[in-house]
Length: 156
Figure 1: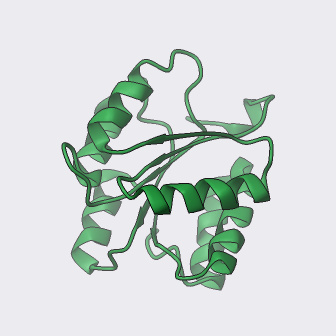
Figure 2: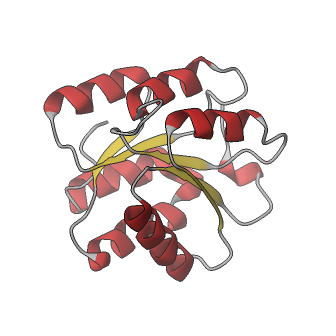
């Protein structure tokens, strides 16, 4: 099982999202919340899988995954991650503009630990990312708290 406590360096996050503005904003807020974080981005699921499979020992601590992308969408990428022995234990949070119950249920069934509808304000994004960064060593509890307090993490 994946264990952040065994990590002795700054957290490493990957965002897979084809929207460059969303990616830039996410990175900016994440670096504000945790300046030492290692951040990588991929613009679709296929690029993400290639990046992750070639990461060697530098696998991320957490993957944020959008749904609607070209080449390989978020659902397909999530399934590929969870079927890969090297990657399957990395927690995946869906991060999308969707709030469709079907998307939420399908990604939960496929192994996502949480589904976050992209926040409409920088303040909300900052609160969410701060909670995740500060609770990374107990990510399951952190997403449960987010779903209760923020109303953003909507699956468990």
